Image 1 (cartoon, rainbow, N blue to C red):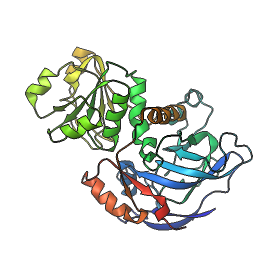
Image 2: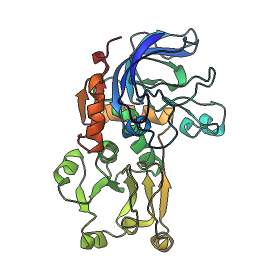
Image 3: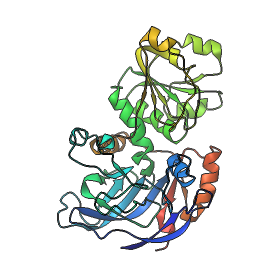
Image 4: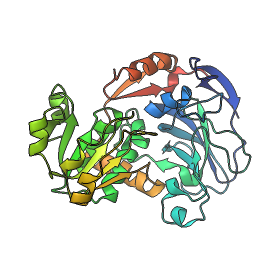
Length: 348
């Protein structure tokens, strides 16, 4: 089907209107009209080829909420008119141990990204949610639960699941002591979700100016990482620290904050980190781990949990033609806390 989106044609170019063709729907496909798409920091990195593997033209967007407009003959879960969502992946092998365990994001053959991937059948490049329509196999479509505001929910499909997955992997619940480094798109969702699980949440920040925001989001306190005395007093005080900072930085100040068997999990930075000392790891049996997004089952669990608890991202709505200005603001951390594109602003 013919559709329109916004694409980057080089690492240095602005995103601009781009007409392209979505695949002919297969029997197990869901066709959706995209209503809202969140703007992730990964979209900016991908458009600028910051990781060195972007293929142009690039249509970003993997926080997608829409309405079903057509279903294939083999589709059983969805019908025309349903509100649905798609996150960071649109396919996987479905046969390996990870896929069968509901961990499609860890597919042994590699999952197919919503953008920048290759269709497993046609081998065509996948284009993301900065567009009017999407065609996705049924297994990678998520149901939008009733009571969840579809205009605000899109960032849950990346920022939400990226922070929910480690909370579930490390069994966060009532009484868990959780630290969150960074209070941006990922960080503010980590705070909200951990607080929703009745954990004791502390935001770790270089300055105290985010304390009111942290508490408004559900954190119990803010710990200044620049206050050496306060950091020393907080030693052994956390079971889990979620590090959402999306650039290279120093982990060493945070490692002594973990209790025995505590884990610092990286969900933000993709690439090199500053050199670390193993001393606090060895002496405290502490761990550094990484975590990507979650699987489809876990993502649906997260959406249902957010509907039950009334948890939504804090968003600023923009038009599609404001995306380049939004990217510039993101680079300055000038958004609280996530942009969402109203795709009604994009003419077909």
